[in-house]
Length: 368
Image 1: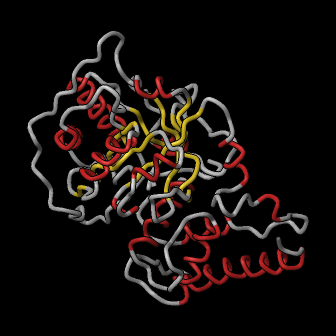
Image 2 (image 1 turned 135 degrees about the vertical axis):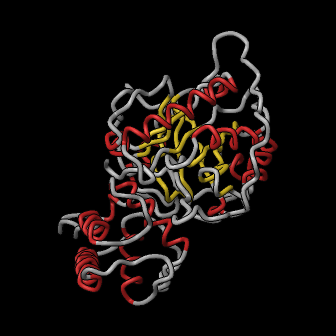
């Protein structure tokens, strides 16, 4: 517990830090490879906002860039990992000094690593807990995740076609071995061929098992394209996966990003909505409710060494296993001819790889 005076001092320091960051930057931008006191201030602000930048060491490395990308997605900004005026302004808006009457009762249980709002939601009925992971989460001990009460896991297979996730095969096998319902997601690149992206995902999975979740499409960036182009290519990806597998994919998105591409038709897909730190998520147009809700990017889960994205599924274990399948016997999911294997963690030309979902990831909107 903290005294009221300690809280006020902390609030003053936080406010001063935000002002200092804006003053330091001026018209300059920060990006991966930068270092110095302004990066320390950036890392402090990201950490306070609930986005883990790694060690606060003044070095703008991959983990800090990941935190910047996740924050930008949550704030409805362009997700490029570069800190300019708009990102700084959004951080300042996110980290105002608390009112003098605020107490630590609103911060949740430190042992759980979750704000109180998220802990309240965890006790709701008819929800199953799950995680989504990528190479940024390191080696996952799925048996420990399962033992901690988590029902499903979703692993990243790639960022478009140019960067594949080196941990996918291990995670895909590990989830099944541990007894979790498993899923696969792909960070979508609208500037790349949507059919080739889908084929790469299918080639890595091979055949979907009876209890596997349908593929998830991670929609977080326009990738330099117009909203109409993004929506059109997304629809092509969805149609191709449906035709090849008989499964209806699930779309991961924030309300603000869906609006930015014109609120296109949902193509019959279920919703995985990203909205952190709220009692109930805001639902994008075209859906009436969520099926999955990613409610934090800073969860603590046994078996995972870093902060991790956590989500709920609305329904029972039986509901989860039947998700996205047509009525009657499920059509077998046939993999296409293997797509050309991209080089491990090869960066997309002229872009920096996104963890996504988290997200991320996921990508995601705090109070979106």
